[in-house]
Amino acid sequence: ETGVTQTPRHLVMGMTNKKSLKCEQHLGHNAMYWYKQSAKKPLELMFVYNFKEQTENNSVPSRFSPECPNSSHLFLHLHTLQPEDSALYLCASSQVVGTEKLFFGSGTQLSVL
Amino acid sequence: AQKITQTQPGMFVQEKEAVTLDCTYDTSDPSYGLFWYKQPSSGEMIFLIYQGSYDQQNATEGRYSLNFQKARKSANLVISASQLGDSAMYFCAMREGQGSGGSNYKLTFGKGTLLTVNP
Image (cartoon, rainbow over the protein chains, first blue to last red):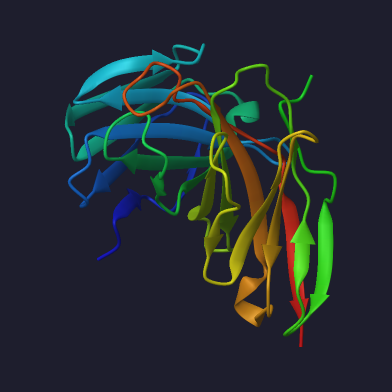
């Protein structure tokens, strides 16, 4: 079993749909992150959770709503998205916020029609 | 201004040869960390190597080494004895500040270099 698991791997949704991305880490880490990777753009940090508390919201639109029920699980709830939100969404974890090594999942490739 | 610049959108190398992937960075913070990640076609980002700004020696991890030139603000990744499985996107990233529990933990990524290893 890989360290950080993301589901689904691919998601196609309409602009009026509501969907959720799931991330689970099996590494005993306390910090979890959402990153967005758009084509031809650098990775962008979206949200950071440290010990289940959100410590960073990097000016992300409210149509993205994160949830961290415990240190092992992280969700990204999506509603009324725009086509420009189509991207690869990567989840990562680390021992605590600020440690050097992030462990990433394989991402969810999202397409918004 | 970009904080991380990777000037090579794509690179080709022959199997078993060495290759250098360029990365320059921009920061006024005296304390920072530099990272390289590999992203194969499967999508996940794989940590390769880390260099702290105060580290006296260049970091090495197996076939990976980081050519850290602080005055030039460059942190090039050197892959020795390239293998077919090294074909992937490679990202340079920087964390400014103390990190490790401090507030400055954001990683800023470059746009990446696509490395193709030819047999």
